[in-house]
Image: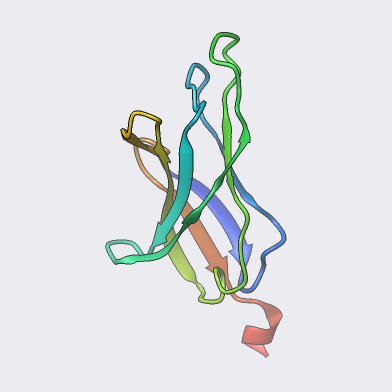
Length: 113
């Protein structure tokens, strides 16, 4: 399953968010956001945030997020992205699973002029 997130070149104000399935506990976990051109090397590997921890017993799903930084969206294109969660045990899980978040960085008016 692939999700689509569209953003214009140079935009940093709108965060990318991903709600996980209920029943997942991320207590004590760390999160990274990674992005690459399809089939290419990683072009972005940065700390991400656990925006909402959720409550697995209540079936409330956690929400992961990445706040774009200057330079992250400077190059137009279509990218594959994911959140990598490292649990306190050292085990790693990637989201979404299966598939990727398709990040589409589009041209701005400045690009077309």
